[in-house]
Image (tube, rainbow over all chains, first blue to last red; front, top):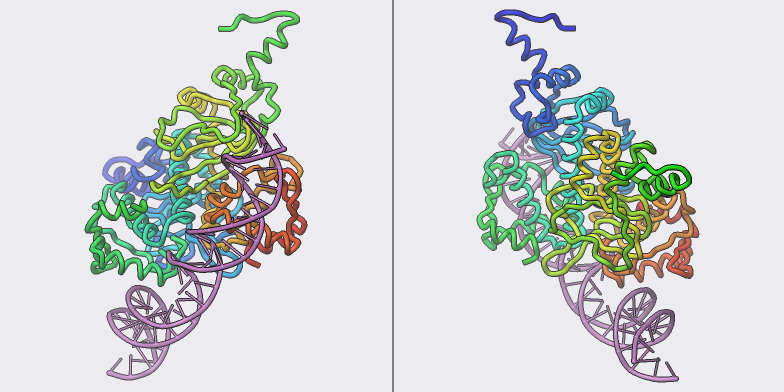
Length: 244
Length: 244
DNA sequence: CGATGTCCTTGATCTACATCATCGCACCGA
DNA sequence: TCGGTGCGATGATGTAGATCAAGGACATCG
């Protein structure tokens, strides 16, 4: 397809044709499963996209013909009841993959919380790559396993935890995911609105707000500039999260 | 390994060495991904087990060195909080696979609800089979996808539905899974206790009990002999489940 | 630079469901 | 045959969190 480029232009040419090889977050994502040389196959089918905050990426019920990688920003996934009640089933950050649960139609709506960069893959071609590279398939399976475990934790939270335990668990979860991505785990940026947090925890915005103030006045957390939360007393927050 | 058996005994010999080939529920399970001939590999590592009701198969936190297939009966999976609050994350029936989310340690406890038959596989050897048969790996991934979608539905239920909507959804879910297994979808056997249902739906036994009576007196369901529930008005039950 | 809007917070009140208590019934072992 | 035990149903009461209401902090915009 692409002519083999030579001499000085070679390097730039490679990067242009194979942006994935220069991807700074590759190891965080599904792409980390591939060797440098195999990556070109991904480059061939990927299309990068930048979208602003509060944009719908796709909606529940639409044909699921694309999958995505989040390379920066924050995304929320949610399901709605007919009367408008909403449950956010997850927040996605740098490195997360959208479209793990692959059926004919999307099972949820995906919407950006902040400005976001996405890698977009046509699903058919991604499926072909999965067949070609079992390592990719394995990595995807292991990511699905992690999601499943997170979903079970979330069920415990939604079904059995109090408001205070829910909020504490939420903050610790954010912090934990930061550290998994190799970022500083405290203070924690909280880019989503109170109402998003409420719909994630099965609460109302008022209760979330009150619970934040309660934790703050107990000296467990501090609310900082720029929607950051300082986990002052992590140990105690963990106790709170488990009902201790 | 096993000597090649000849003549009249051959057939029985095969079945004994390869019980999987005679498995009546094979197509429902992960094993359905394999050809007759490949099944012998599974037979070599499988050990079948029958266990009574209310037995622990494994506990949260133990080394996850086995995976299982349910060939008959009902199993529940649950997580506990330190103070004993319990969340049941799922019920498993004939054909379901235990151990999808594979980490070093079990993320939940698995306990039988009724007498149950299990196929037991050492995890290491199962992993080897997954490498050998990509079809098996694919099947497992697709089962994980389904579980993930079910988990998202359950989050919506736990976070945003009322008691009545929860119970209605639960009954419809049982019925739907029956029909997926090719069984009659009404009336629905409900082998688990009120307290199990409560811990699955994020309610108390009393509320579950009251909600059953409420649905009964509205003529939407009938409680039959032998813990069966007759979904009298399926359409209306669906409306109730979605808050209609 | 007021006008308008959105988000967060806080207060007052309400309610769905939890909690506490009791009872009936089926099952079971002695 | 008879207590014992566990489960399910139902009634009385309590409460965590929802709902309703209002004000304050910012940002955007004519």
